[in-house]
Image (tube, rainbow, N blue to C red; front, side, top):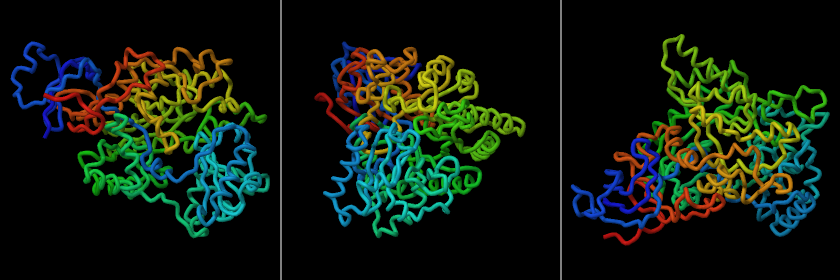
Length: 569
């Protein structure tokens, strides 16, 4: 077991009791001292000389990062997807698809899965299977939009899925096949409705994609984590028992290098009890010091840019004034779901992006808390609201009052999804997206995460990348038009999040969301020794250089898992 004494460091602890330090002692997998050293003695009084002294030369040390909403399973399953050139020229996209299909015949790749095309091309959902047939018609072909909530498929894919006008949508109002006036599927699909027919698809083409979760298939994702200082993660969607088994095997092999907080997805009261039973089975079979699972996950609405978020105002492009988007359930059912989870001692993590979804969820929490009080039960369920892109000013202070945790994917806070949402909402509403400042000031817990789902965007899961975008509201890869938005800064200017809030949101606040703050999230004596040694001071570098800070060393459970340490004495 290693014994380290880090000296001459600039330590940001994320611990309010000891906010800064210059000396850290590690014994085995835990911190045993965090504070101020004695420069004259060279070592802390009372510490034996068998500690390896490491002079960090004034470099900054921060806690190991926590990505509290990401998708290890989906990322691992996406390694076989084909990357599209990013362009809004539909002819160029179709030409690329056609040439790729020509270069890779059907017997080599029986199913073509392309990502991503700009969501703006889906405006009005007018893309058709016949348009995609021009590029490839000899096998199933799927194109996924940049927002990851709309899919465009060709006729062969509809045929192989056996989806016709007579086949009902798997989740009416949310996971649906866009249809013409006669009910025939057009080739546009909202959310992942096609997944419900994937077994039929693969059976009919006699082929299975390399999507099975194995320790080998998941290794690339879990190698990314230590290289980017991520020592704990919260799951977005558990992709079945194979994923839990694979992570448990990697843990046994000493290759996990992170703490994991899992979730199980459910669709409504009709399957909640069944899914809770699955969660209990996963707890029983796979719980370990590094693996836990205690949360249910719900998708309450879709996305703003694809027009299936739940809104308080009707869509701008709807002449009838009756389209308020789509929502999976209303307040009474969601209240019942919260009550069940509270009685089971489980947390609930909810995807929501529209202001109506946010209000419905707040109302449900408030109602469920009242029921618990009336029944004499303690309220133990932690409501976690993910994304919360668009929130009414009337609801923005409710999370602090109701004990709701807000999880923000802050690398979205610049120009990542562009202006596509303005097909459905006003510019003023669009400009209020990702406005977490009042929540933060009100005392609500706000955590930060990446929510990456494919290898295409995995590099954006670097917490320092997310912190830069959250602080500047400028996306270095997808900047807003500087002619319309000076400096490519996304409005509103006061929505920029300060650096300390971001760093705490990626460490101690995310650890609290995952109920792991007793063992990680801060550099505190008695906690697990997880930390990052930075090449530059996070608070001093120019705002547009935060993402360029290198991780000189990453320590997980007291062991060096990335980079190098200066020569120890």
